[in-house]
Image (tube, rainbow, N blue to C red; front, top):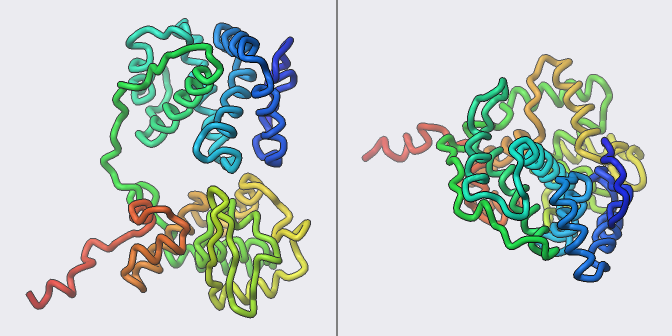
Length: 339
C-alpha cells in the first residue's frame, strides 16, 4: 500500500494507509486522537481541514469509524479501502473547487454529487451505488470533524443521490454453473488445492471472501460436516460442508499458514491467484461475490425459502438476500399453467 506524507505534528505523525493491519493497530491509531484534550483535538482537526491534509483527515476518519460508528473496530479492510478512496476523491474535488471544508457553501455538496454522475473531462460517470459509497465516505469525514469539534456542518444532509433502477442481480449476476465447474477443474488440473477450496468455500458454503480467508483448521468439523464462520460484526454462524468441499478440504490438509487454510491473508492476494487461474482458463473474472450469488441462487432454487438462504449467507435481512438470488423470468410458469 502507498504511504501518505509525514506531517509536522499531530496523532498521524507517520500516517499509514495499510488497511489490513491487525485490529490492535487501529486501536493504537484511534488512541492517539481520543487521548487528546478537547481543545487540542479541535485545533488539529481544524488545521487539517484548512489544509485539506489527506493523511491526517483520513486518520481522524478511521478513528471515528473504529470507535464511534455502529460497526466499530470490526469494520472490514474492504470497507476501509472504499472509504479511503471516497475521502481522497472528495478532498481532491474540494481542493479544486476551493471549498472551505468547515463552512461549505449551500450548493457545494450537491454540485459534487452531480459531478460524480456526469461525463466530464474524460472521466467516466459513476454508477449510483458508487456515488452512494463516495457520499458515505464524505459523510464519515464530516462526522469525524463534528466529533472533533471542528465544525457543525452536515453538507450532504439534504442532497439527493441518484437511484439505481437496475436490480443488483442483473448488474452483477452469479457465475454460471459451467464457469464454476471449469474453474474447479482448472484448479484440480493445476494441483492448486488452495484455489479449489477457496472456490468451494464461496460457491458451496457461501462464505464472504474475508470469512474464507480467516478460517482456521480448528473451525472445520469434518466429522459433523460443519464450518464455524465469523462474519461481519464478529457474528458467528454454522455452515454445512458439501461433499465436494469435504473432499477438497481433505486434499488440502497440511497446507496454509499459521493455522489458517491459505498462505495469502488478504483479498488482494486471493484475487491475484484466482483471477490468473480463471483467465488462463478463458473465464471472465468478475470478483468473489458472483460465487456467493451462485450459492444463493442454487440454494433458493432447491429450498424456495429466502429466510433459510439468508441465514446460510449470514445476511441480517432477506431483503439483502434478494440481491444474491437470480430468479428465472418464468419462475412461476408451472404454477400458472393450471389456472
